[in-house]
Length: 88
Image (cartoon, rainbow, N blue to C red; front, side, top):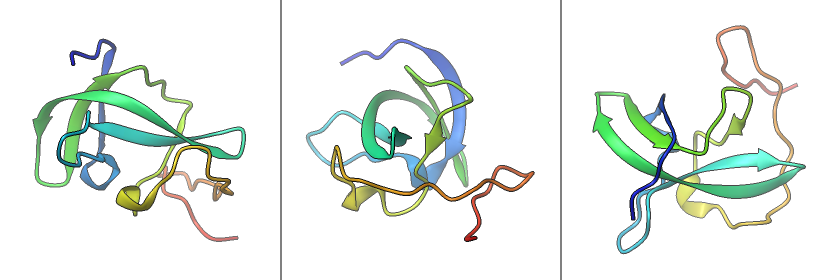
């Protein structure tokens, strides 16, 4: 399925591209996980350029995406200046 939206460069580890499933990224929305379908535009060594219903303000899961379940409660870690999350 074709997904429309602005292109974003995301960590390669953030793209959940399981077989027989639309590629997606996972965001934290109201303390719960939510999948967002994306279209892969191209891959680089450590990043992927994807298009979808994404905004720069969204908190994206960047590790363990193959273990995510929609609606799963999560606590997002605060971001550092470089955008990385750190444990409190």
